[in-house]
Length: 168
Image (tube, rainbow, N blue to C red; front, side):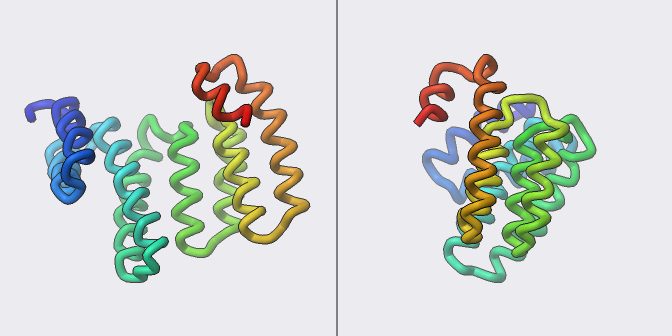
């Protein structure tokens, strides 16, 4: 495990075999390569998954811990090359939702729509989903209409699997 790439491969294999060891492994990789963008992004994916698990389980203490850890990692990504990726904005939005800040979550997604490189359909669909979950059907419908426009713009940039998924 001399390179960030070897750590990432090891983490990806472990995550399918033993999630606890994978979690330990990504923590070690963060210590070993604290500024590596690929490590930071994989750690952010890991932390966001743990955050959503804690939220679903209703574990307040674990949720607070995961929010703090995800904020730290996303803060590092924001400063680096990850600033203009849909993943970063989506993750920041999920952090806001975990803190019950719906308006901030939507604002972050809308900011991402303005500054990120396509494809942006996931950001637009998430906005619609938030409105739908908040029992705001009119806003959800408007967001879905914008998602349709976004999909038409993103279409040439999507691979065939993505096109099939979004055409449902």
